[in-house]
Image 1: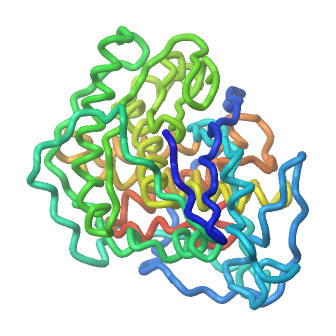
Image 2: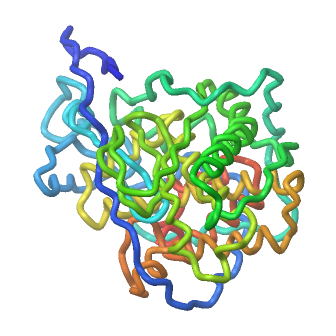
Image 3: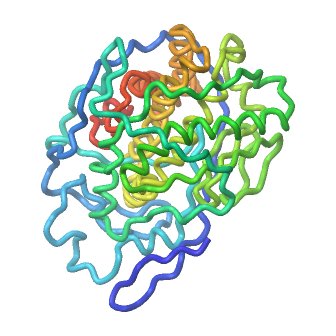
Length: 402
């Protein structure tokens, strides 16, 4: 799809090229103790304090410099080196390739809080779901069919706009409808034929759309319903070739891709649990939400200008936010889908086993999706909070997205 990037000095920018990045997967699942549920962090803080000065990281791996990402504190003269004569995102967006998967993807956020000091870990309170505001009404309109030709993804024109979309996005003020009456039947992800699994997952997106379309529309965004493709061998997509074992949201074609063999990455005792594959697709739909609200492309813009280690922090913020949104969805449709409290707790352990440390077998790995305990904590946060701002990972301490 051709996208217009606005103008600077009367000159129109060309559209971006394909968004694509290979997504490696795999790894063993070492045993590990469950991570305790996090505590409640209540209303998100939309105006955290950040240092006034920071260093401009150098471009990595031949990437062009995209201007100062900052620590989400606009600085006079930003970006450094004089006044901006053109949109600083142009270089980034022209060559940006973007694909986000459940197991491995590299996006992260350079995030300095209170002069670089860490704040308390992200937490949720045990007990009932907390909304913080009135949930957006569920749309009365008929659920649309999967959209193979959706409108263009919103894209920021400046880093200041990207910053706002990450930290104070209007969607954070909305709440998901919990519960939502949308029964999701069970399916055996190991044995279901490709056609049956494809139909099941595309039907699932109807429930995902019912949960999320109201809040996004209330925040001023559109939410097309993405098609889901199930594949059994490497597949070529708008984001290039995808691995045989992965689940991915591709921003280039706004589709979700699920590799049928993905069930093999889970421990044997989790392969038959209810709602595992549905939770994976809910995570990928979380990336759809991020794309449609400008969060995805904004996060990538900052990530592309960060150092290698800082870039991974950006990636983890993006990924655990999708985990959080997936948790909210399971809590929303869980009652009508017959999920017990035990089932919901089991799903938290599923996300623990998707941690970078668990999949790689390296306890202190600096990955791009988050440690098992972080992924479980944010998924739990989503299950226990209907307020979407509770999933605002861009104002959370670095330690909570480790």
